[in-house]
Image (cartoon, rainbow, N blue to C red; front, top):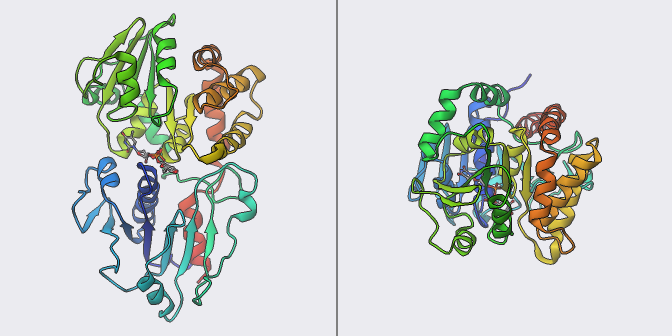
Length: 386
Ligand code: TRH
């Protein structure tokens, strides 16, 4: 078997939030650590990555962490040599000078356009499709993550499930996580919920439902997430990490620090229910095999609601109608679908079927685990294109 082409460049522009950098970073890490590939991640803004990777500073022009070289994407780029393989994350485009360097190589690089994740049925038809550059003699291919064998699959580190299960059986490790986050260890009778959402989520109504519920709920929210909604609900400034929680009725809300990606995984593994958003946390919540609620990045005209339905159709296929219906109704309420139930009502229904959702979480992961792993697919495609 021929070795994978050796030098890869991953280009990514941070549109908003953390996911663009989060996905590109996770891919770069896997390529470097698991395939020994020399990877350079070019990012136009390093702040987002510095929030989720302690080894990266927002000011460094060129730095290395986790086996990856991270460079600030400036135009023109500091170095002109084009790599053997080029990943254009989320269709971010490539600098003109770099395109010319690619065209100037004896053999053109393998060029992949990594697209956003979607469960929609058209993905299989678009995945892997060639899209030659309009001006230069440069072949390129679309690469679509997805939930089917016909897609590029999902990012998943080798040994992820073993690491997850070992953590779940390690009370000391879990205790250290909660201590590091400044949150008391879970009580046996409580529901522990992590919540990562966009500012427009109907959070106050959900907090009211938890506060007025029968069972104790501890909710942990990363610092800066939904702060205006928290302040509106509590009529006081959102707490800082490590300070007293917001408490009302059966609910206590702790604000926790933003943590490194791997610690965020542990948080998802240590909670009973996870509210996630965007793309990367959405996938990590699935690998955590626990009930979760997904908020999509809102798109004009509600285009994100079609993406929501496409995933819910796949995710709830084969699930008992009560459980499937509860997932659909809560997710629609959480994504503010116009005709959705009130989020408090939908939560109660979701909470009632939670035991089924826990079982389904593992069944869904088993289903996904047989799909192609995204980085492995790119390495194979790059090698076979030689
Ligand atoms: O931050 P996001 O909302 O990013 C989104 C998505 O990328 C979406 O596709 C894009 O359209 C939109 O931005 C503009 O959500 P996402 O994708 O879950 O990325 C969050 C990343 O942050 C993920 O890699 C997990 C990481 N993270 C940590 O590492 N530590 C933390 O404490 C938290 C809360 C998140």
